[in-house]
Image 1 (spheres, one colour):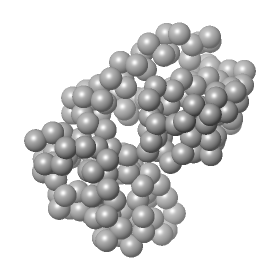
Image 2 (cartoon, one colour):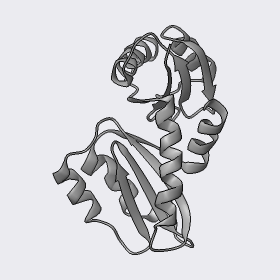
Image 3 (spheres, one colour):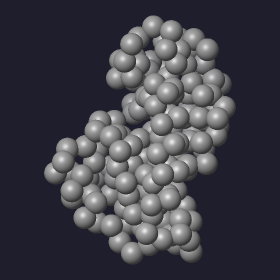
Image 4 (cartoon, one colour):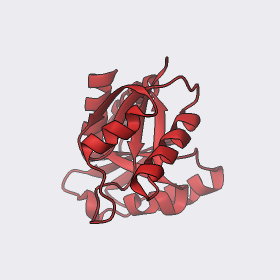
Length: 179
């Protein structure tokens, strides 16, 4: 059976979106096998008989809303895709026009249109850059810059659609651990 990595968006934020790790594990086990949960931010490894990432995402989202009572947008990658994201990250950072201080990865629900992509990349500002590869956005901030004050991270969902974001350190650790 194929292995998948699911990235959940906006859980454990505030009092109304709680999804404890043990509950997340239990619900994911109702959908797939070999479930592992990393951190309490919604990183899940599972195997499934389903043959597409989109089908796994839909099934997980249905199980999450049934259990929690609120929607949990979920982006799913086949496990080999996660390794490619990490390999891309090294290449992307090496081509940045500045010394990279922070590198984040946003996983999009769908690959953006050419128009949306053009609008998004036109927003680049000094000391920050974005490289979009398929449905993955690599967000780079120069040394001395701060991710939370950069302009591009806040524009990802507004310009490109539903997404969830992780620090490259976490993404690389998941690829190492689960790959």
